[in-house]
Length: 77
Image (cartoon, rainbow, N blue to C red; front, side):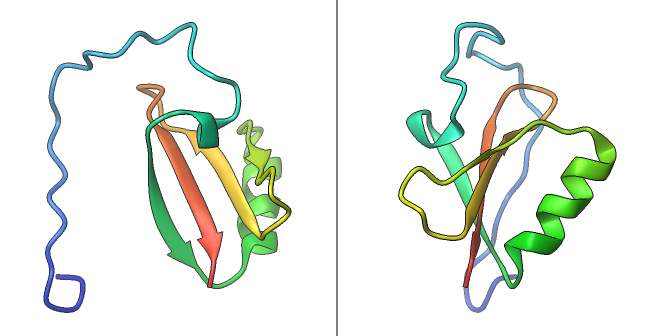
């Protein structure tokens, strides 16, 4: 539960191509997750060698992709 809402995560066949997607996840369909400190996540991703891009607007947000190439945004609130 997230407040009075629920998030359902389901594993389904990926209908989207794994290649040819925008490098910056903000230019693709994506899910946004609120976090408290983008700099901590940036350090974790750097240590793990996981590629990401920073928000093009300058706000504190990181875009990365999961193993199925789904774009994820982590924005600082």
